[in-house]
View 1 (tube, helix red, strand yellow):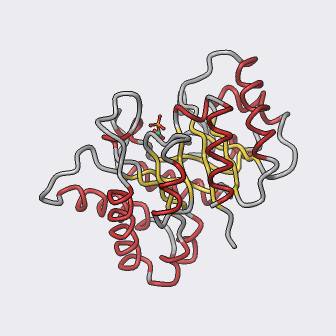
View 2 (cartoon, protein in one colour):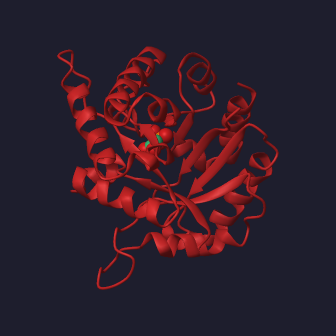
Length: 254
Ligand code: PGA
């Protein structure tokens, strides 16, 4: 059985290395006990150097929150996939809505995915709509986002990509509401169909699909039991070790 994946996206927190260390250590205590879950923590870049020293074994892995598609050179403020690998990251989040909001395009996302694969990183690529309209425009938007991701990579590499469905309206403290299991199931089916069109049936069924947006220790069991998903991308709750540990246990048991 394939392991479930739970990714903690720490975004721009915590401020202090000390806190990053203690939060990571507490999460590792739970994460390293679980057989059925791959825990991934994606801290701000600057904390990778601190946390890589705390990695031991493979049950908790590190990820970047972004990368730039060039390996090295005159690109102020950017971090490359090769640098992430050198800092012991094995995953990288790409195309998060908070990056897309500040100008990241589908073309940028595609270049980043390609470069992540080239460096041997597993890309966790976010897609999702700002509003869920009755007319179904959001499905066309998701199709466009998914198409862009897979247009730049070979069929052979398709199942090395992890997709994360992250509806923007369900993310963060200003979320409009939590997604229902129906919302997630419906979109997961659409995404799976889009993938079959793009890469063919066999690879499409192997591509892991995560859900992200206000996942917490209350809603996680319902989500994992009722929706056909491979795990979660967790924001706020991943900075609270007791809550995140409960999430990890629930997914491990499912
Ligand atoms: P949230 O963030 O869990 O705080 O809603 C999720 C995300 O943006 O990845």
